[in-house]
Image (cartoon, rainbow, N blue to C red):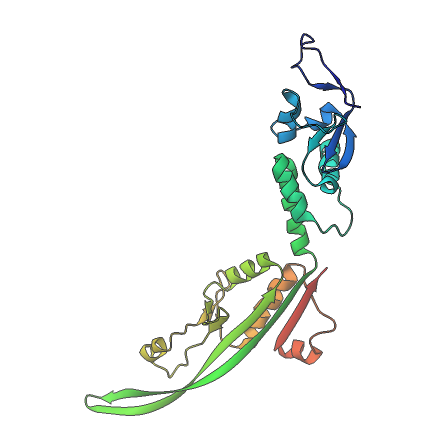
Length: 262
């Protein structure tokens, strides 16, 4: 049964329901109160039930909303309780966010953003390793006014492979290693300048050194030093070294690291 309507001379806008309100949301029925539906007056539901009677009703006179009926359960509970209580392992945050956006319930949208951020941080996986390739450079060195000689120098170029399911961690690591460049495929790349390689020849290689950010500014010259920075940052952010992978010898030698965060 549809709720009784307030008379036009009863002091409230005509058509507003009194008593329990029954909603038909995508074929799923809910009973609630006018107070619950108007908890947030600036929402779509608040506007709908503070003004004239909603235009759409089903054949039984229930207010009809053409949205996901299952997701509306959580929307309605948020209106009732003022907090978001989702079952453990809830996997339809994107759908619920779309529904909250449709109803324009801004506190619910803010809470969903917080929950999504927590889910991104929990259960994160981090893997890091570094590849090193050596280039043998040949260049001329001026030894006098008319005296030039051929010199050879090895240049070690490091390419880091860092994968993490938590984008915020990658941003934090990038801030810690502020001068980190990228290779052609987007992977972090750097090369320390050997002391016997002239700066002009070093610049021709289109590589650059890697320094940690202040206040502990220092040059990173080995793969182990890079992974040490990853290790410190990961432990600070609640990661723990995976007990299964990699081989313990890899951890001791800082060749490859894998972390998990539960």
